[in-house]
Length: 331
Image 1 (tube, rainbow, N blue to C red):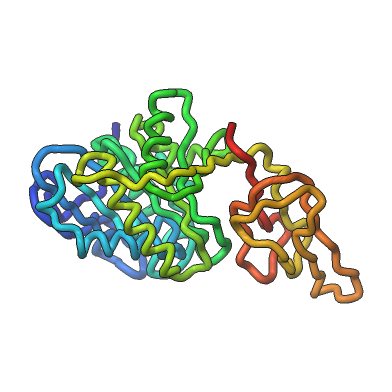
Image 2 (cartoon, rainbow, N blue to C red):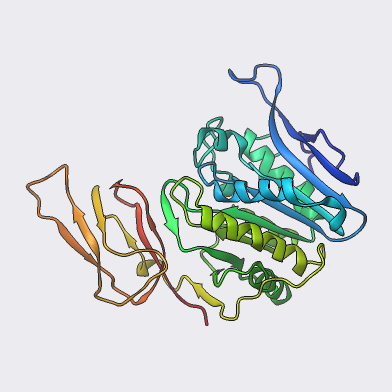
């Protein structure tokens, strides 16, 4: 296995609260002879489970980074048993630019795994996390939200795996997080995602979708903070019982054809919201061809019953854009 070129400025084996950077040597117009820093925090107190927590995988999703920074500031390292490794701005160049992809190489980090130790800057950080951090973790979480492009009903994501024991651990981790909606990633999970990296490493992992819109939702962020503590209790790093919602709804993608996509460019005049149940034949909205005002607007209807997991947050959409993501009960 090639050695990664990424190096940490802190000792990840040291006890206590240690804050530093992952350094990625790179030469471009912004940093000709230096390195790009990716902040990393280690909270370690003796032996115990190791948990990897990341956010900012996409740089326009800020509920996750906010919740993780609350944890960094408020969690007393003496109260934990084990280690929490936190990367609050996983794709740091993208976070600084409020961009879904890195401005340094135009790569989507969650489509860059397993990475490349000698590849672009995003491929290097993906490789380091998969080979050096996930391989040492007992559990992991990747906090996402809809970003500027979309809005999700707040949910936890658990990957369905061929390894039934690992899938059970993923589900248990998702339920311990405490959100009442769990999205099962079945055959639609991308093999280049961090979720798939965790499957390759054999590590229980969940992701989240925490609203969206490109800002910080105060209610969802506060709930996420509580959920992170619940997950740590479930894993035995903190004393106490995890949050367990009495009713957990599990959903999955039955077919990509159940969702709605733009077939042309224009304005989608949406008439439904994320988190609501819809019926076949129900009106989703109207599509206005504002660049061709002589063309009549089109009424868009749902072809299938289901739950709206997310919808676009864009005003003007292009052909191929996702308008509404529809899922069904997981059975």
